[in-house]
Image: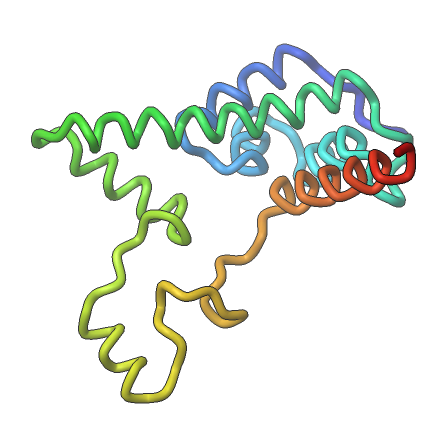
Length: 155
């Protein structure tokens, strides 16, 4: 299969949508990319095994820009929540649903029920309550692990 050519204009639109809170793959679809095309960009930018090439600098920058856009979107929503007022409610909703592992509330009744059932508290990470890792998060984690190993080998 011929690799999908990177398009900086489409990439910029996807990055803007991610900053607004969209999932990167859904943002890519919204701008006309097929799912496998965007996955290929992520793989080629992450240097994942089995990708069509080693990590390509322009795509490494793109993957990093997606990470930054997601973090900035979260930060902007958090800023609105911390500023308070009636306009903070939509931002609370967004944070709780887009980043449930960080921002979702766990009702006291759920904690009590889990305690009585002998389960780990809902705010304690267990395989059952950890949100599934996104492709982008997995690629970032794998990239960081490779960098740590490479730094250890060169020392």
